[in-house]
Length: 471
Image (cartoon, rainbow, N blue to C red; front, side, top):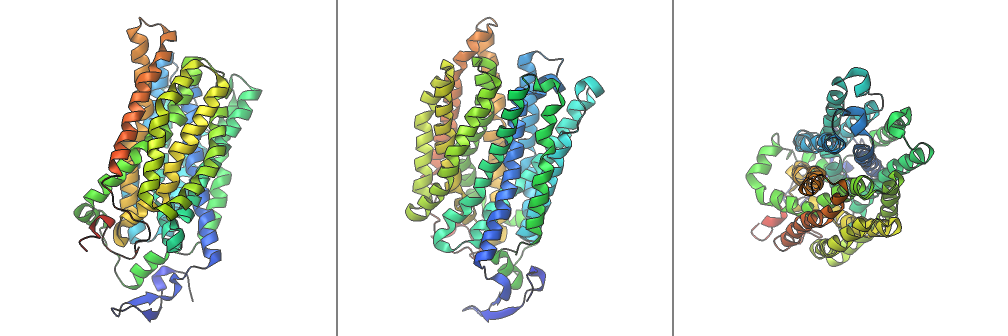
């Protein structure tokens, strides 16, 4: 018996006479291997994400955009950060389509290679001082490659684990790969903390390259495990029944516009909050409030510790109480915490800021993330599930997460300009930034009242969850 989905054989028939594939059964070892491989891919994606967030806030400005004022260099740096998000929908479409045509395993292998290679190459880039404008151009190019790979990585991890897991434990198992986010964030911030403690002027030494070069180690482990991964049971069934479609994007557009919009709405608070707290808040605390550069990494490390507990708990709660109620609860928590947290940031107290970001990001934002693991894949039908999750995730990543640091930086610049250029006045930007995050979060809260409960639905259905009532 082979695990290769293209040569699946049959040993059983359903009530309609359609054959099942022999190799679609999932053992405990398969489930464990899938959890590890998805977690490592998530670790690489968010290692890159946290690494680039920190580098954008602390390093890239003087290295790649030195001819700008500090404020404009920060905006330019976050502009390259945004471009990685802007290209993610394209990556979601390309790799999401391949995931629904060629299988989840193939795409998960391709995306981790693309992300890892791009991140590693950033570590050997020449700077502006060496090659002039070629330096930011190459940085942008590699950031685009990162975004293409990331555009389907997390979607694939969520889809694969949801399709692998037992029906009554999908929330928990689909949340486990998102612990890779904590691992990746911890590794990135931990490395930066160590480097910053040993060298206060890391931007003008070779040490800033080390965290990017370290991506190579994660690639090697992730690729090794993914090569031994079995295809997801749902996709194996589609292939065995000859139900795989050649144009999943066209099928998605025809049948799933409402599901995609609902998925985007769910992500406004989670992805927006994640980007705002991991990139903009760090920049605000260090560059505006005046805390030491190590403060940003300490804040993120504290959030990671809390998030490591929150994410699997959120998955378990979604199995017990339903996806919608749990997701809405964490969104409301983030909404209520927004203004107090940003006011605390403005006070310049390191301990209070660490506690605030640990609660806001570690519980509110990442609680939604943990509940989202099975929620998003369950929204879509089997034949366009991968591309459906990828498109919904990555369109929202552009309009919520990718643009957030740019909007926040522009708000800070606007506040400073409105006070005659007094840099100290930038602290007052906490209030409009909090309004911005509150609006994103409110969109998600409203979305939860228009989305159906998906917990326990049959993943072999061809139609979406929103069509269950009429199917």
